[in-house]
Length: 255
Image (cartoon, rainbow, N blue to C red; front, side, top):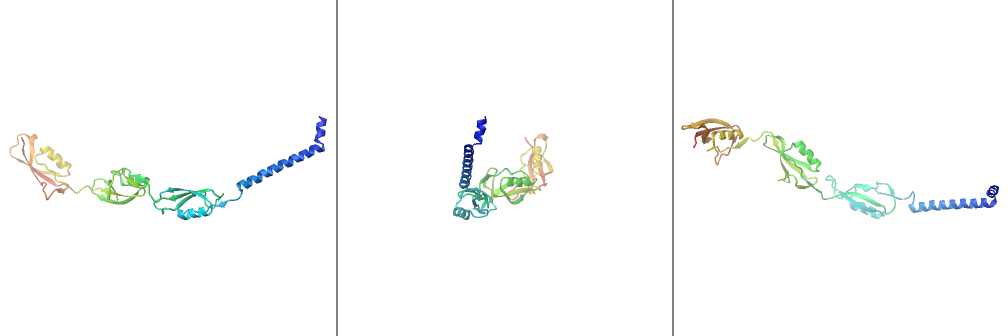
């Protein structure tokens, strides 16, 4: 043990220890400087601001500064086609040469969407549904119908369309709504040769009123009374009458 401590105090050990320490320091310095050189620590090129530019100009700038780039597209109806709306990395970020810059550009062609079911629902619900599907509300007009603000018909570019139709995203959809008043006129029903009870039912369902019932001849079986004529009656010049109009009928005994 005493010889070991003696060796530790010897000049030979101290020289070897010093040389080992120097060697370790040199190796560490070489590694540090090599990494700094390889990674170019603290150096780089700032990414230019490209958002708002047309892609032709943005790509020319990136080519000039030695950047690679990849382009993705998105459709936004309120933006000019070809405009850069997003970039990654952000502007002014320091990056190495040949770094890939990712750009999002407004596309010229809108993707198609399916028209949702809008008929027979309330206007407010239809308006919200259009927005959720990426469509826009166009013109609204009204048609006689008992239900107020209910969608009766859906139109695009002047043509009636049904749910499931493929349309460009952002298209304007026109709606025809009920006015809540209903029709002011109805078709004159043909009651001739109908049994009296059946004729009464048709008059009621048509929104008309039963007027005078005139019996002609002898009635032997009230269950087989038929309408012989009516007033007003449907003609070539008169096919509709106002709701609530009284229909007078003449009936006689049927077979």
